Length: 504
Image (cartoon, rainbow, N blue to C red; front, side):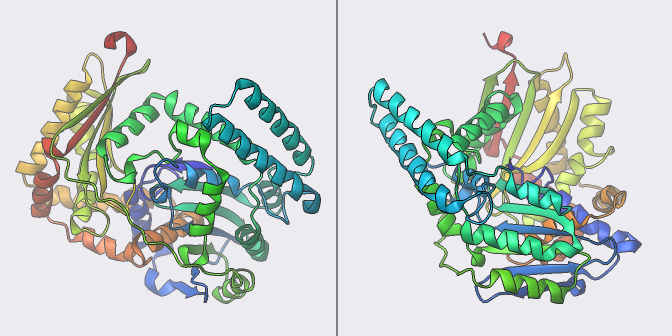
């Protein structure tokens, strides 16, 4: 289970990387085909969208279930609900995860009653004695209930059936559930995943909140770059929920009610908000038969309106500095449009110019020639459904400082604004979008993720192909125009880590 702030990725792959994955299909003879003709799709009456790519060969398949919901749909004061729900969906169902559900059910109800009572006592500032008594009662009730719990039930079943890579991820935009399985286990996969949607049981909620709090301490509070990134987003987005951490703020996590996670589940985990992509040694007809058999009886529900605040124009440079016992680190970000704006395709090419490959501008000019930085790169964050940030990060090479690194970065951005990119360099960047992934074969997992992502983010998986055409059409004039619009001091948010001894 993981959180991911970086767009398109439930791991650490950017939307650009997803695009590169596709482009490698067209450059490698083994996979050369018309994607639009090979991919098949169907929908159930309840709105579930299913995308299938038959790829004969090794008898395996990858399945990727994507729900169009992420932390961006959370209510203020309830941050972390999307990620907490992802954790809960690993706890089993009425059919899986219990040795005797009829006996466990009343015990779980008592655990949840006491957990809610403890939360209320803390909110109401009850006496320490009262709180300790409830905690003791909760611990005893949890111990009784756990006698019937079978931990890690999904991993055990999937592993015994030859499944690998079973995981899930929560991002700003999506929540996804993934697995790779032997081809003859398609029906087992369908039964498990449909059962999870029909009969989920939120076991161990209150103890799992503590697990998430510890995860937060590890990944954000005790990790310099995690803390810096979190503070950066909170400063870059003052109105839009992209500024809230996926994992949630500590105070929100510690008092997050089970009822809110249940509400989130009831609202968003419905078939008409989901897409399934299956890639591998399968037949479309068999996939459709199995999916209809197991998923058709899950009822659709009306989705609420996705009302999201529009981030106001920044209107001035913002700076964040945190002290930490770590190497100096530099972030600079610029607001940019979402995936459906033509200028976003131009930004993809700019991304390539600045940091794709050894001959990229940041690597050549800042790292290798001037030796100002140990590393420098670019990425888009923290999502794609809404206007987001184009970010540049780096670590200065001593005795250079973050200020020296920022100065060098601005020099490269000014070149984009004032010096037209040559035809040869532009073509090389576009070619590099293909070459980076030609070295490796496209996996079933990667393609399933790609199809599910584009279906849910853009509304049509075919935009995977359309985007390659739009990027191919980007010109040097486009780059100069967009760079002048995006890379301004008024649109910049800068974040630095300074060592504790220097911040005194």
